[in-house]
Length: 235
Image (cartoon, rainbow, N blue to C red; front, side, top):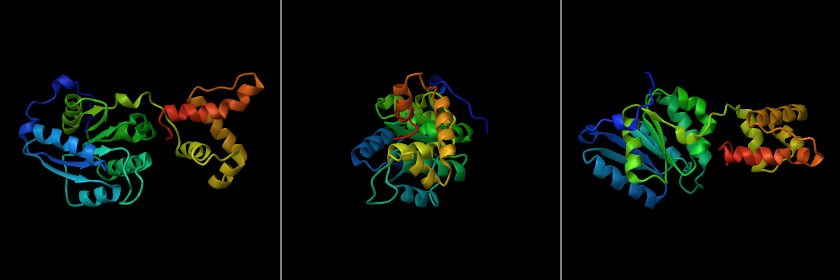
């Protein structure tokens, strides 16, 4: 199916009269309640189910075939586990692989984090829209309608950055676990030379280059991690 960016003014006005099936994934009760209220007003005949964890969502999809799934990016893997952005990203990636025509809307305060799976999003055959939680109800409903029509709206992700999984792992180890190159090499089972090569590749993608001064050369990896965080590559 051809994936097209539809202008918001071209969206169908008949969608609210249809009997949509919508699955909403969010573990924040207050936000979930607000989302449900807006959806029920717009789609009074829709069948709407909710889940709060990644595992519950996967189980629900085995029997419930929604026209649209609305996902909060930061969710727990299972009950009792802390909600994490990585969990939501992995769930979305799994859904796009197993349900290539599923219409998806992601509502999140961290839209740039989706840049990590930009390639998968660009190749997804179903609708895919992103709505920042700061948007008003009308704007969010526009993204819902667009996703239901199979449209795409991903400008909130920012610029396209192509990175490899091993580069992301290096950034994660350097930031969240604060490991130095030798420890990173041991953890990833690669040589220190390869680690240094990954750093230069990441810096090239992010347009970060060492200056002549020794101080700048010392701080370049700190700058790289901060820049990667700003671009949504790491939390």
